[in-house]
Length: 424
Image (tube, rainbow, N blue to C red; front, side, top):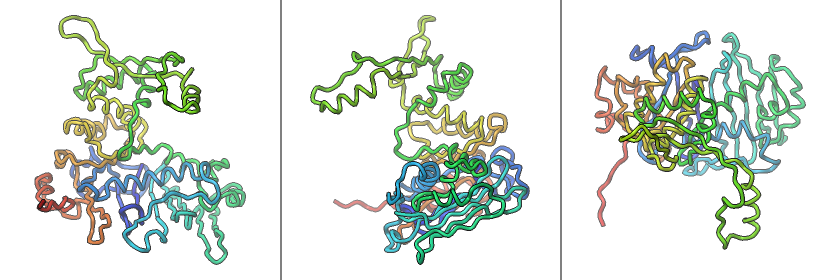
């Protein structure tokens, strides 16, 4: 469960920006759109949050920041060698941006314990890293790491509650890697739940080429395939069945261009021949008989393809209480399909595990007080220094049953593109 995420000095974000999943005091849609946690003293959490704003305002950059944090946690101790660039992308419209660290911090719940984890890094090293745990709602500082510019080494402080060979983990942590990642790679069972939370976080960033393979693999199980088929039918997709076809590639299946370099041909053959390829086919009933006809994945509409791709992540969210982050959810989807997907998350029967969704969209049809609470609606816009600024609709205290979509498009809440006159 995600509570809060903040980022500073990354892409279009200069000063610290915070996205909160804690519910405000309003009672609207309280039972459907929010849920209680098992953590004492913690407010109710939101099941979904949507971000609006003009193109280039920074919606995708917030998601990119969360994606960077996840990748660094999961891979910093495995994929980078000493001296390799970390690959962070600082704010470049301020002279201090490239020289200042980028900062990331996240509050979340895993296995009934609240955690607060964060780090700061430059292009070449981690400058600060910390982890606090709140078992039984009492804070415990498990570790903190500072880079000391005078000694050019990291200074560590460990809490008494963190168990294990801390000195070994410390000595094996490279400057451009995270202590958390290193300790987990060296079998820290106590820190593994923190790592696991990032591993289960599902992010679909802007521009990524989505693959249906996750949903195809889920269809290998007959019960899961039936649920995915029911998921699509409930969305008014006229599919009567799903078949998964497996094909083993042979040399005769390859159509290699004759002008491809021999070395590349050899590599392509080595990587392809003998491998099994899975693809989905969709069964449709003919209108003039009881016969069926199958369509390949590529023959279906963009909306059907995307809904099939989303099916497995959506079921993971609903079944396992995962956090799903999606950029441009409405791309290729009818507004009613977006409402359908949201209805599954806001339904206490279908979302018993309290999965959460964060998404960016331009679809204003869901700016409806019957669908979303005001604290679920966030806006992104550029300030006078061309840096991204995030804020909630709650800041405006809209009237109950106010026409939110109309108010947004009229500029009442900001976060709209400024369209100037074009003169040729």
